[in-house]
Image (tube, rainbow, N blue to C red; front, side, top):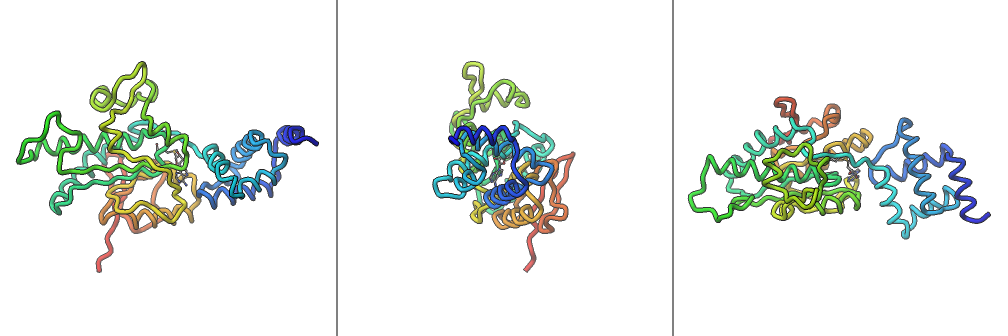
Length: 307
Ligand SMILES: C[S@@+](CC[C@H](N)C(=O)[O-])C[C@H]1O[C@@H](n2cnc3c(N)ncnc32)[C@H](O)[C@@H]1O
């Protein structure tokens, strides 16, 4: 049988055996933590069959061998891209962003200034196409401006005023396992529909109109560093004041969620904050954080163990 014939036979059959699916479930879980239970098995099978057709592999096992070979690294990352859900938007879960902007940034600025530490580092883990880290950056710039309106610096600031008034340094790290999503994020160009939740004051201050789209201003982009990063790996960026990992853990099983939250604890600065998605919580997952709740916005603050 020619490769094409067998591939189409497989596509027509349109299904994989239970043991084939199980093998793939385990492989995907080991690779990135995504967990496909029975409810999502159909989705897994659908995406797998699509990738097998695209690669023209004659059987499930030849596709599996490809994925586990050193030449199959690229296909593995394409498969993971196809399995992950990339849904996101600017100001997604507004109540959480209000909490970050009005309460947490204020507390961080005061606390850091008292300690003469003028650096702020926030990590958007699972940033998808960039709307989350750009929202975070805009809100950090706003919070800094407002802070200096009330606490003017003892010297003249340069004009035009920089987004981040010296001596502060802002770094937003944004990471994902999808190269396609990261490329879109790095481009930072969004349609009118994607901009729906961005009000006109923000559009004017932080975006340039390019044709019928909106491009994130260079000064904002310069504050964000996009990077490929798999949350399943042991290495996680250290010394973060705040971590946003929203709508990512929901696709992991409980043991993986526990491992990840433990790692987040270790890579947050003392008293740092963790934001999760609206359907995610630390209930039953970790007792190393205390819940901060205000007007429907929830975050978790790292609890320090007294020596
Ligand atoms: C639903 S989106 C959430 C985007 C954004 N955080 C939000 O809430 O709007 C989930 C993102 O997590 C990424 N992701 C899934 N598993 C991951 C892993 N193991 N490491 C890093 N990113 C992962 C996906 O590629 C996807 O872009």
